[in-house]
Image (cartoon, rainbow, N blue to C red; front, side, top):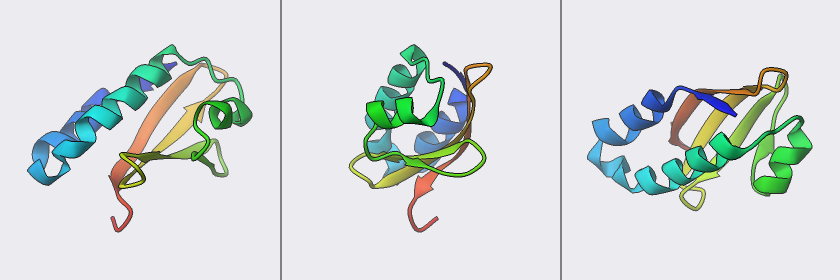
Length: 91
């Protein structure tokens, strides 16, 4: 999959030192998603059991033991993952 944009993830953990613990789990998700070839939501669920599939091709991933949420929009036809949001549950 092609992921747009890694800079969103970097900004999250670099701008606030309290989120530095998200760096390794987020990069692990990123590396996994780069190698993936998801054609439908069921394939995401096979890879990430705790992922939440939402309407309009959106998916919520739980990062760092459910401490953070990563919300993406996936264009399955073009194999593109757009990062829409990363933050805490409260945010």
